[in-house]
Image 1 (tube, rainbow over the protein chains, first blue to last red):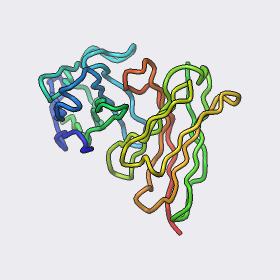
Image 2 (cartoon, each protein chain N blue to C red):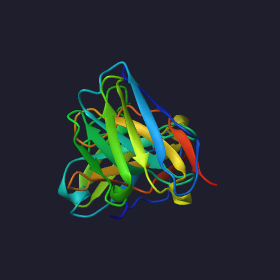
Image 3 (tube, rainbow over the protein chains, first blue to last red):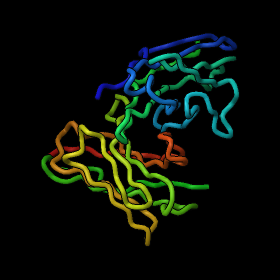
Image 4 (tube, one colour):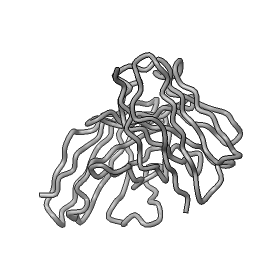
Length: 110
Length: 118
């Protein structure tokens, strides 16, 4: 199966909002509500920021939000902070007990 | 809280079998789903597969012919075997828990770099 499509890069200034997209197909993103988002700082393990499209685990700031429309999911980071600079990956259940990740987006805080 | 730690050799020869273990502390593997995920240097994440506490497994179709994930409840750990490795299998390998069975991962282990080279 193909990886989900994410833009390679995104950027914003401190305090601004930025949205990262994750495009799949009706077989994955568009076909269920099991989309999650992960933040990864250099040399570190990924950390979940959003699960089931829009749910935030305990401890994740409410500046992070998720949504979905059709075959495209989105992660929005509001009130950008320097610590938000990282790589972000989406993932989706792809049916038949299979899961697929996006290629990742490098978020730069200007 | 639950913590995961990967262990195993950092170097494997081509055509041999990559074997890793994930030790779980602060919780029992006799519940939830437990996955392996890898990340080639400078690249994105790839789900390898999972084992459910009941012992059932599911694998990425692209790796299914070479992968086995098994559990050891007596030692509270689970393992990955990847056969017939090539340089393309060089990656950081992570173990992770799916806390609800809804296909998301938290927490993750710190990861272990495995290089395939003669």
